[in-house]
Image (cartoon, rainbow, N blue to C red; front, side, top):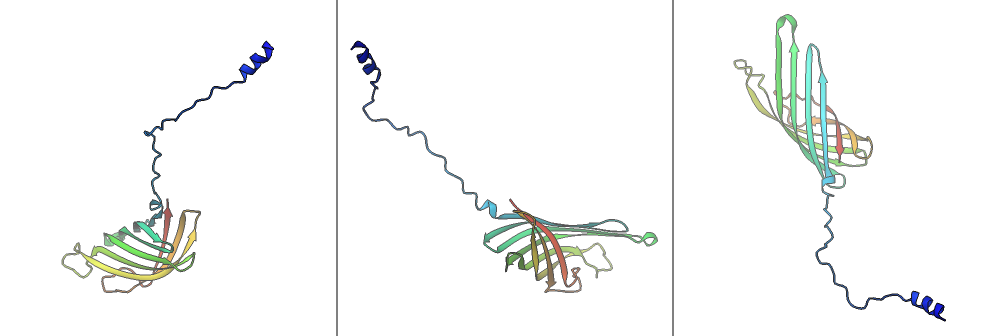
Length: 184
């Protein structure tokens, strides 16, 4: 019987009766809403050729996708041209400025685009001061194709038409563009 009582005693659990105090110092961290950051895109057009005729074109852009199928952005343009005419001399110039664009995707791959460029470029009509530069505006409209390069990158090709051509325009009509864009 003593053995049975000890076994019975071994089965007794201690039970706590009462209320627990809550630790009010712990608060779950708020989750930061980073969805808006995923809507930014970064891209660039880069072209280069070297030799007697040297041509460098750089155009980094940053864009934003406010809603599905629509993207707008701004960027910087830098263009360097150098031509070596051998015995006739050497000519070089830089063109730079800003540009903005709005792009709407009609389908998953095809888009229409409007673009505005504001560039500081040489005034080719000032014979007395060949280094004079003036601001020239370009309004372009066109469309293109996006080729996906994975989940967050794409290659863009487009054909653009200059709606404001003038004697100082150095963009041919039409202009073909190829660029790369990535979102993070």
